[in-house]
Length: 160
Image (cartoon, one colour):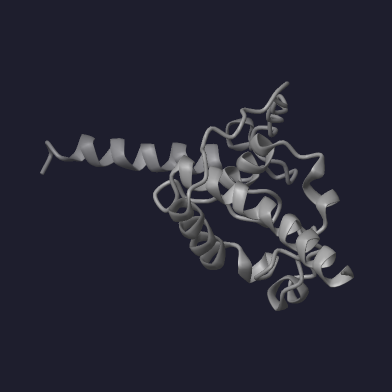
C-alpha cells in the first residue's frame, strides 16, 4: 500500500497541472498554450503559363466512353446537351455556361478544362482518378467541345 502511494500522488499532481494549464483564465482569455494559432494563408496556386495540349486522338469507342462518363457524372448539372440548364443546377441556384454556344469554351484551352474536371471548381467536385483515368478526361474534353459543333451543325441545317 505504501509503495503505490507516491504513484497516486504523481497521478493527482498530473491531473491538477493539466487542469491548470487548460483551464480558462479568470479574465476570459485563453492561456498561451491553449490558444489556437492564427491561420496561415495558403500560397496562391501559380497559374500555368501554358496548359498541356490534349494528347489523345478520339476514336468512336473513346467518345462512347466519354459520353457515358458525361451522362453519369456531368449531365445532372450541365444538362444532357451541355446547355447548363438542368433541374439540379436550377435548384442549387447555379449559373452554368452553355457549352452549345461556341463562345462558351472558345477561350479555354483543353488543359484548363481538363484541370477543372480533374480538380473540381467551386461547387463542382473533382473527378475521382479511380473512376476516370487521364485519357478518359481528355476524351471527355473532346466530347464537351462537340456540344457547340453539334449545335452549330443543327443551326446551319435548320437555316437551309
